[in-house]
Length: 450
Ligand code: GLC
Image 1 (cartoon, rainbow, N blue to C red):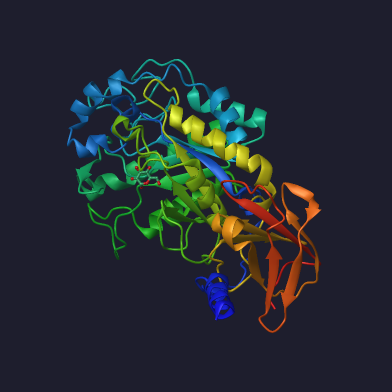
Image 2 (cartoon, helix red, strand yellow; image 1 turned 30 degrees about the vertical axis):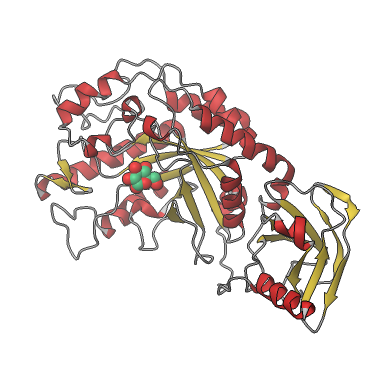
């Protein structure tokens, strides 16, 4: 009887949630570095950071352009922005690329723009750090140079909708044009800005947003950003630099750009092409002083990295500097904790591909690469009480099994051919990692389900 219960429990644990495995897609060559990186940093810094109620405050408080610029933008002064500190932190956390907001929905440009179409509410001064605020430093360049120095890739976020631009005003969650006649010149001006950004900062990624008005047969003042506009913009960008990676939010859900963006969500199964989950630590992208106690734990964030890698995705984790450019303590401490884990277990994340099996284990996640299957055990009861995990039988011959941080100590394993499962004994491992321990199953060839 006892045995039956054990077998039933075991079966439940081993089967877990089934998902359909999609066919492997080909990763285009220009995406290789990105695909292998798995983990990047998002930075939301704009004049909204001064107010400290998130990056949508202009919309949420229903401010006019004039009010917003006088109350908020004028007071923004990111003097304590420290590129060296930020890039070192990203590097310590194990991140391989950084995306920073060049222009968010508020329309404020975080660089000196010489495209004269983007003025403040008076229509006299370019609405950017340099002209509007007289800020002398080029923060994007400081970050770009530091990324080059420390070996990280650099990318820029750019919002297509622009609540400040004279062509449009905010309406619901989207911006509305005053008339359709102004569309072409606005779109041209944005192209010029994007060219300016590419030529000045040579970003590896352009990360668009604010594209989300519905797809219509033809543009209206409300649904003004349409598929053809995005196609034109995409080919324009690639004509300047064909190596740039573009996210799908150039106009989402139409197969444009190079990767799918999943916002604050982990898909239940691998997607049909490369994808990335962008994620906040505390449900706010821009600095929000009311959410400093809402931070999720580093363990939770690490489990998300593992879950996403097991589905072939990338994880873009946000930090929200304050209005003076300095970092929030929790952003820093969480990243340092993630870094400690990545430092030990990064091999099971970078350059890996997804779970090779048609089922997901209830004890955690799988990732794999040539010659190795990684079992990420996030559920502590498998170490403490159950004492083993089982893995679906593979076509590959198993060479040895060990815990990633203790390769010299081999673990016992046995394949039960009737059950099509291999049992890995964990009992001999005295001290599992409190976050997640990774067991390596070394095999001949690429791990493949039998
Ligand atoms: C949303 C929000 C925006 C945020 C972005 C990050 O589209 O509008 O504020 O920057 O998601 O993915």
